[in-house]
Image (cartoon, rainbow, N blue to C red; front, side, top):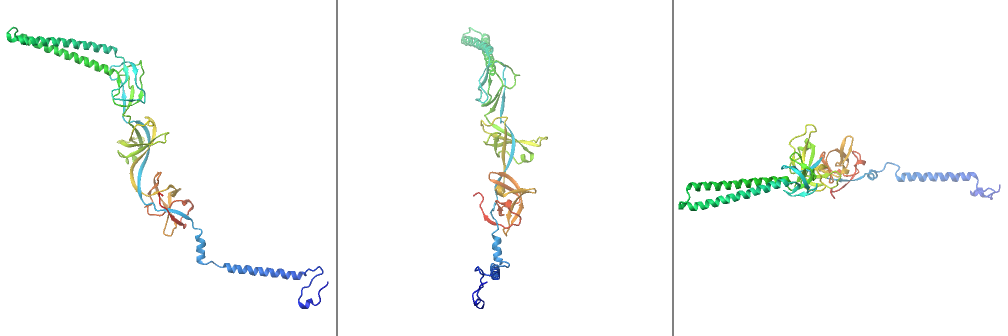
Length: 395
């Protein structure tokens, strides 16, 4: 092994023949490096605070985890008490039309269901050939009676001119006067008989008792009809319709005449305005339900016998109104989250009123002055602190 002279005395490093350092020298370098690395790690630990952070720093770290939620103060507004009901559609005033006269063979039917008719319009014509001949015969009798009356009146007038001259006695005058009056009476009788026959003939045809909409037709040409033929036509007077809304006695007690309603026929997206015109004075003892009759104007979509639903505006209350996202429910019922003075979420059980496009009315549980969480309530826990952002409802 070679080495430089005097190297040991000067502290020089010994070198092996291949020029590398001995193992003992490398070990010392590794130990020194480890010591230095440990010192640096200890220094960093103390520098970063290897002890509890300051209260301000802990609060800042905690504050970064507080969720931000939207809240609103709902106040109290006018909320209508809406009652939902179902029922059938019908003509408000349905008029059954049958045979008013003697009847006979139907010659023509002049209307179809869906036609509008006027008062007195002929719906179906009945053969009146025999009755027409009778009327003509009576008219001839009237003319004959009138001729006799005219002759009797002329004779009376001539006799009255001769009585002063003594050619005719007063007895003859009284006789002629009586004959003239009798002839005039026979005229009136004949006229009355003719008018009666003409009236009967006019009643042979089936006529509309009032203006309205023809709903059904139950007669055909050639059919023999009489007073026992039953209903031949059904007419909705004026085309007016109604809905017979069935509801429980509790809801029926809230409804009064004149309140507005919205009626939607089954299978239609269109709603029709109406108003309650009659409230049933009795309750069905079997179903415990009553009927509110809702008047409706004519529309082709309102077909009698059809089924419909109704929303009746029974009244109005001053209640808080919230969006649906603010109200949640679980096994115990409906609830919302309100914030206390420390901005902590507090569960508040509520009773939900009517649900409409405007939102959910709160019938009980809120007075309207609370800060209510509008959304994200499902992710909150009671007592959790939040960062509130106040919103204005309706905007």
